[in-house]
Amino acid sequence: MQPVNLFDLAAQQARWLAVRQSVIAGNVANVNTPGYRGVDVKPFSAVLDDTTVTMQATQPGHFGANKASAEMAAFRQEDDSTELVPSGNSVQLEDELMKAADVRRAFDLNTAIVKAFHQMMMQTTKA
Amino acid sequence: MDPLTAAMKVAASGMSAQSERLRVVSENLANAQSTGRTPGSDPYRRKTITFASELDRASGVSTVDVADIARDPSAFPVEYQPGNPAADANGYVKTPNVNVLVEMADMREANRGYEANLQVIKQARDLISMTIDLMRN
Image (cartoon, rainbow over all chains, first blue to last red; front, side):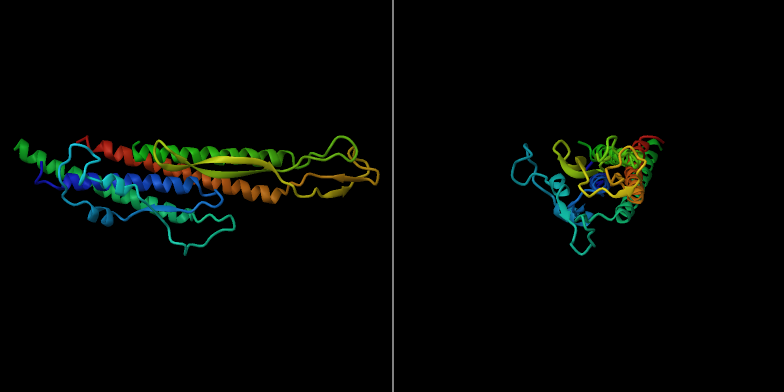
């Protein structure tokens, strides 16, 4: 269904949120690891900017094939301005939990929109 | 691997690392008064634990694991207890280099880390059930 772009967009955002959640999990798990530097994913807008209309390819490795998932996995080292504890760990537990709450809220919104849109489509088909 | 499943796996590795740390703390606390048995012998030496992050190749995320359980090389404090069986010729007993306050602080930190990991697992589960709810009416 090409004209309806919303489902594709919502699925992409859900994937991005899931990747972000796993990155947050990695930061929280390593909260007491000496020398560990916190990581984060690229903002969703940057991921979205990178995904343009591409040529159809028969193999994922071909020229111009969709590379959205690879872009999403690109982790970004957090800036060095965060204060460091003597063990060289840059993870702030409160910040990570705030980010997790952010992911949850966005995911909730995302699924609610998909659900509403799906109901609208079902209404037209059933009528 | 699905990122949400990977998130749960990572948080589980964090929980097991923190519970291992809690085990070390409890060993230290339990042995806070364990002196030697023979005159002049060494008492219990405090254990320390360090974590290291590991790359999980299946999912590409960094899990955590216990790197090493080592012994604290700091000196033993001595106490004058001539009646103690572990006392040396001058009546001094070497006591374990365990500081109960430090162990308590360590315990609270392990507790906090465990709770944070638990929260991450709960949330990953919630996200999965939100997605499944899309299939319901």
